[in-house]
Length: 375
Image: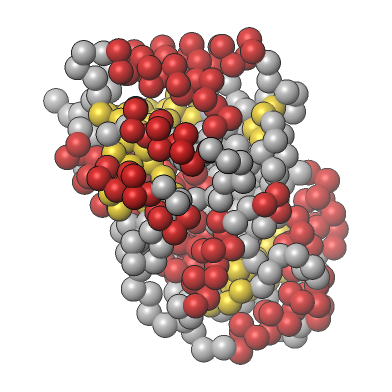
């Protein structure tokens, strides 16, 4: 009988956590595990993918880019009754699946907003005499904590409830202690699985010189607006594909659509995004985990404009380290304009292609092997 894995994933603003977790879940299925993924964010077509049982909790989203509150699908603040309903549904799913291993994405290093359901879940797990293993599934670069005591609390929760911390990163590129000052206290339970990249796709049938993408799109309007303004400042022979993202507000998307010149196209989503990059001369994007992976897999030039609003630090560190390795060009988000965008694109296009990538991008397969062994 194959082992059962319950994988909890809550995406609030973008789709990065869901995409990475889905790649890991698919790899677990290939390794013979039965995977049930519980999600609680806006649905995204294609995720978590075939072979994975999917349970969707009532949807919640971040109230704004600073994650200052939670709303339901209609944008209304959630109340205690809503939280209790989610908690009960999550506990019912856990008892129905009876997993051999539970994975929780981000928590306790992130997703404090959903403690109202995760702590009851973890308590229920630990009340069992023969309980499943519990793994924290963690991105390679963490957001810096602004409030005193948060890091110490994270350590306490990890030691109380978790058996392993699985870091989805290449330790030669960045280590947990680079962004988490208490990492030494968790070293004995920390393992690295490599960077989780999607499988290398075939080249797309379409070809564009420049592909500009905004990830999920919830916070990508400034990047795409600057890109649209940069198009007439660069040679008209260049062809452009702009991808707005599934979460871009309708009014912002419509404004971009109205301003698109003839040598460019705008769409919300491309299922062949990785294939587009394989044929492009330049990828222009934020520096989110999954988009960076796609560009590294494709081997194209990359211009990164890391998301930095609301005190976000994760993307800036990733972009800075990639630029230091010669794998990307960097343009700061503050003060972004069409003129600065056009100049940065011209510089990136004139540069030689990036050197061969030596980072470990096989993180989905490595993670699946580790999880199978633990389960």
